[in-house]
Length: 181
Image (cartoon, rainbow, N blue to C red; front, side, top):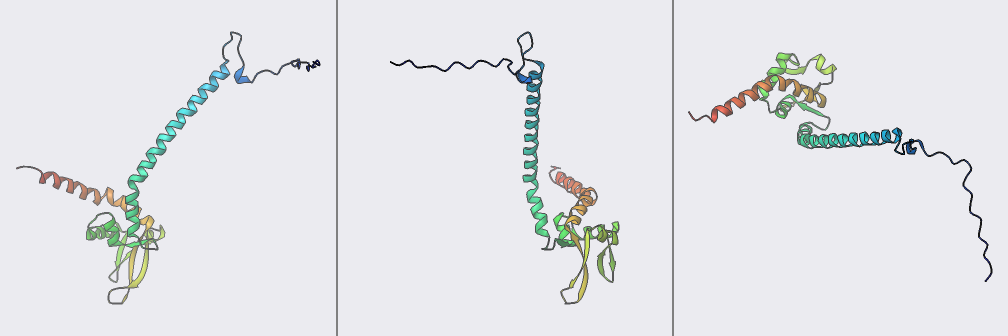
């Protein structure tokens, strides 16, 4: 059998490169402080990820909870994103005449030549618009219309004012209805 020549073994490099900093060992043979710090950073990142995932799931639950309300508000709006004052009152479950009186008392709308018109501030801020349209008889009349942003803006003010009072009165009436006297 012919002799097979084996290639000489590769000699190790004369000056081996040092291990990466995170893998270096200290003299006692344990892991270096850098590796411990890297592991701590990874643990902190994982904890932050868990917290973020919990926040995302909470936010998704809140979105799912309020989605029907948002859809209902959008159903009240016309294609151009406007609704009249009575429709806005219905969106808040408010008595329409009480709602319109509240708007007049607060100076959000005023009556001119028999028509309710939004105040200049409400028009300037984009909460209401004035739209002209025919009434039931065909006469051209001005009508105060609430915009999408105005619907949310008015809802906030209604629910801390008269809306809150109405809710408290309804709760009181419900409690009194359950009393066995």
